[in-house]
Length: 189
Image (cartoon, rainbow, N blue to C red; front, side, top):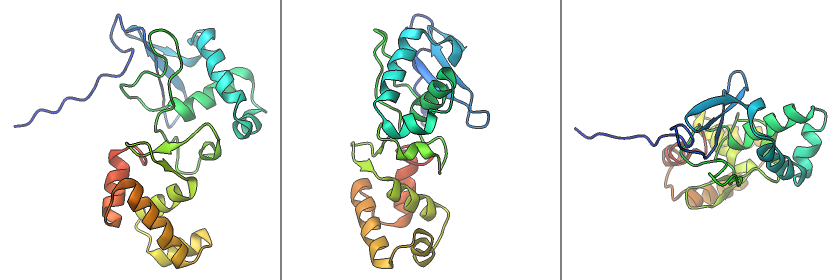
């Protein structure tokens, strides 16, 4: 019998001063682990919030979409969309530096997928475009190519070009392979 160990989330063990931000998809609440404790986003140290704010301010699309929210709510939404997955890669290293965004999709159609600061990648770093994400989502739902092309308002030949690019990025050989590899690489959750 093979035993499979899942990595422990960063910050979840006493003495681990790295920070792992994570969110609840239903409530959209945001929490973090640090030094073995779970805390609410509102308790995130200001030095960390300032780093998130700097990242937010560098993204004109995110800034525009979140500009109507108050400071804490905008940062919380930004953090949720960028760092919402519970993984073993610290979002803030033990020295307090903000790390790269998680490969996390807060929802299939969240506006954050258009943010300049938010990108979904394959495990070897190839960027998956928002259009490719839509196609992957439609394939996951079992839609036939003709329906996918119709829903996206593109020709079948254009869809074929997109699918070829997706397969190349994922090193996939079929629609089933696209879905399997997308799930394994946290491109779809």
